[in-house]
Length: 249
Image (cartoon, rainbow, N blue to C red; front, side, top):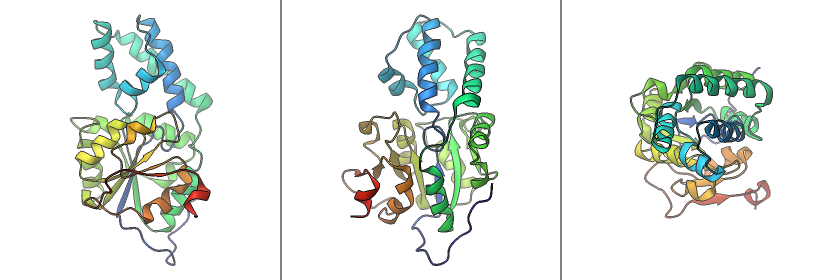
């Protein structure tokens, strides 16, 4: 896949780096994860609601989620269960995974503005790269892919985003994060970065209340940046951007 080149006639953004989460931002994997969590947690005798699964697990690493499961079930999670979960997730991704609607348009717009971009996700490096390749999005990021497995503490700690910024040689204050989970938004805030929340998937909008702006259409992302200032100029309440027609009004 070839990506567009920077267009010198477009106004540059106020940010030097856009940091993307992967699941629920670039690829539409969260509904798959929701279904598999419900099915496989039942095997352990725990039957959480969809809302509980989103609240407890969305945006966090497998290691963090296993600790939650052990706390709720009162016993260690069998290693065979964990391996079966990973296998089923991989198989489901192979069969069902698609890109988030509008994300290619968003990425093309960011590339056209000449802004650097990277992925920083709670998934393992192999899982992230497989997801990007499966949806033909890897070319937008090259080697700029970072995993929570590379840092001491995953989201909501700021470690992952600070690691990504350092590797990309960008000041955290000049970064903007695109996230769909409350844990990711908290991590971006703790890292001193601006953050755009995406509520176009399974995340309830109130989970993203601490984001600088909330969008429901990923294609609006580049124009959303036009009105978003670097960290320190955050409005008192998150701005909500809904449908594309509203953005042009």
